[in-house]
Amino acid sequence: MSSNTRATASTGRVLTIWTPEDKAFWEREGEAIAKINLWISVPALFLAFAIWQVWSVVAVSLPALGFNYSTDQLFWLAAAPALSGATLRIFYSFMVPIFGGRRWTAISTALLLIPAIGIGVAVQDNTTPYATMLVLALLCGFGGGNFSSSMANISFFFPKERKGSALGVNAGLGNLGVSVVQFLSPLVVTAGIFGIFGGEAQTIVKNNATVQVWTQNAAFIWVPWIALASLAAWFGMNDIADAKASFAAQAAIFRRKHNWLMCVLYLGTFGSFIGYAAGFPLLIKSQFPGVNPLAYAWLGPLVGALVRPFGGWLADKLGGARVSFWNFVVMALAVGGVLLFLPKQGAGGHFAGFFLMFLVLFLTTGIGNGSTFRMIPVIFLNQALKGVDPRDAEAVARATREGNTEGAAALGFTAAMAAYGGFFIPKSYGTSITLTGGPEAALYLFIVFYLLCIAITWWQYSRRNAPMPC
Image (cartoon, rainbow, N blue to C red; front, top):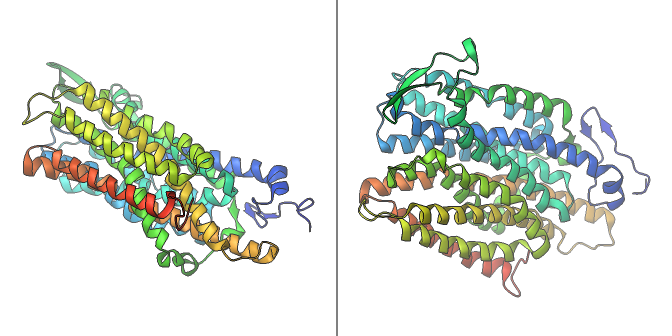
């Protein structure tokens, strides 16, 4: 059957023929199907990020509710979802080719109901043990795990020249869940919007006045949307037959040098984004006690999320390696700026400068997220096609399938490794403050890491005659 007459063969929601690199197929029907799957994937991933980062807001609110937790314990609650989410991503990375993207998206989204309902119940009682809160924080890792499977799934639907933009849209709009949860939570807790179904109000003292809040709403507000997104994924998305692969076939990435190098680079971009987002409210509260952190913290993740699709698009136009290299340079300089505006020995400091430097950091994490994620599928596809005779259509098709399968697995696995940044960054703040009285030691460590990322990107990918230009 020629590419001009081939129709999409499907069985139920399974696409048995899927050839996005065939331009005629793509223009005729592939693009429309891919976009449907992308636009269902986006809200599901948005909700995953919202649940993953809900503790960045809830942890700040607990002392006022009468929960007697130390500063380090609060940083642990903000960091724990990233620890479990990163670990789950390792397994989620390989789920789409085993179970199918539609099935796995629906199931993994529905699992978000467990921590959403659990947190809503637990915060209504300030005698809830810290261990219970820590378990609930770890269960929010379900949201973190979803990113790896979501990105792997979407990568199968788009041709090479569109992967950067598509993955940027999926991740960028999905990342908005971080900002929205930090912006929306302080608003929804001010009213009993769920009536008798939402539980009783809690009484707190704010600005020397006694007010009522419904802190449980910060978690409950997501429950109906999670249910809807799960149903939309089940009934609206597709599984791709050619995307099926065993764990053994995907595990080939562990023998690929570039898988491990890209783990480091993506830790520098996405790991920074999710880590800074998780720790930003508590860092503001600890360094500038007179500032309301929830009035400002949401702006950083918003900037990083919105610019991520632009980072993917820019990488498609200029090359992922070139964009990533200069992005890491700016990141290192921005951390230096944060250090410049921090209070010294608990005095002084300049919040406006501190906040501006963090906005630059979030901007660069977003651009870098898009550019590094564009690099990964291109690297693995080019590696698979190396040495293949372009006139041998069967060999090209086989190599393309292998490259796409490995690229999708690498996307998921590097995302898993990067998510540990969401644990290490806020935990580094907490440890540095405990040991030295301030976060400076952690920030200097971040600069050293960005310098390592600059060196890897230049040597392996962006310099003239680099081993794997991309």
